[in-house]
Length: 170
Image (tube, rainbow, N blue to C red; front, side, top):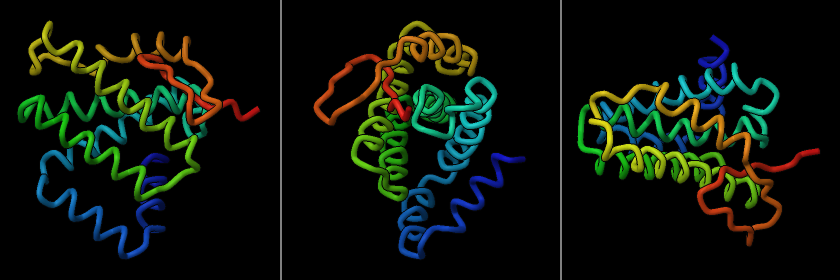
């Protein structure tokens, strides 16, 4: 229930221009949009359970949440369309998220980096598993391992290819 409240309050706080931009992205792809919304809710609730102190901040839980979010969007959308179309939509919607809800540059870099880790991880698993048989549990354990080894992002020039990143807010 808390998840829906957060999402509702977020949409309520958006300007008319941002709402129109969001609608222009989701209306042409109604099924993908519904599935990505469901992925958002699932990723948020799973991250809150596993990382209650950092899932909504810039810590390890946020890194986990962003990467899981992209894995789930890819998984759900790939069940109804091609993985390539799912990847294109996932990139579009996650970049739009960062545009609609701007952060400080380092936070944006962190989020986009962790989104890419999730998309890459899904695509890495794809050749070995038929897309119809993917389940969310395929991602959680591996992303928890990646989270345990996540690196602290300190500057915009930092490059941690293949690794989740987070900000040390201490």
